[in-house]
Image (cartoon, rainbow, N blue to C red; front, side, top):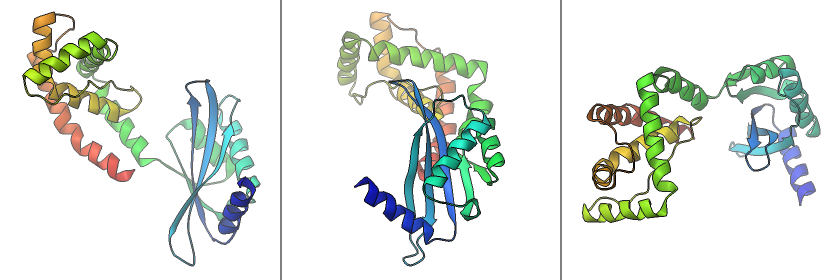
Length: 233
């Protein structure tokens, strides 16, 4: 099955004049092993349809300077006999080592729009001291309920009494701004149940009125960026 699929993709790529790539390096959390992926994107000349195929997911045990990334990119392209002249451009994140790898390879790169958007939001909003404190506070609230079945059950009981949506608290992943937005949104949605819980059990630190005001404004400001991110996916 692998050989048949490999040959099928290879034939399709050889029939097109231009090919664009997306690539990224990530580490598997369970095993702490790094991988580099290469995905091809092209237009089928007969059906005029957009085609996409994952070309390679390569174990990447090396350090990540540009020269090593370049070698692994070339290894992936050579397996499909793809000449550099066929590559229109390659989309990467904004990491300097990835940019360097593409430049050394002789290809043209363009930064990922969603990653650029994330960096803009992080640098302009999430780096502010007041916002950092609020994110830490919201993360602590989410951790409290997500790690304690008893606390979660108490909150659910309060939600039922107040006829509030019985949603669980969300905890963010600091490197993904959208998860921080969803955490803020969920925290603000549960403002009244959380205040009731804190008044009754005094087990978590509650945001001040000033902080609640900032949370509300953050949710309002970031909502359009979330919609744009979803559309770009």
